[in-house]
Length: 69
Image 1 (spheres, rainbow, N blue to C red):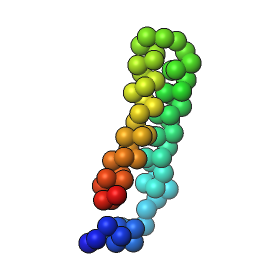
Image 2: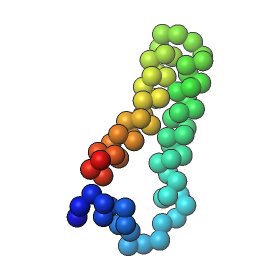
Image 3: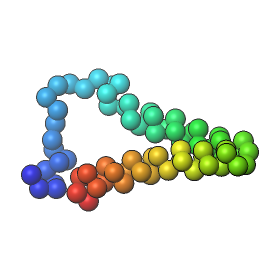
């Protein structure tokens, strides 16, 4: 398959809302945790906020590279 055919690949079964929204919900929770931890304090909180805020960015980069972008 070339890189443009990935957009049209479908699964063999009907996906439930839980399957469709599982990763976006976890990325949203990670973003909220990262933003709140950045507001709570310095030191360890800053490190936690950086790690958790980078999770959605890393996921987008991983998905983009997986598609061959």
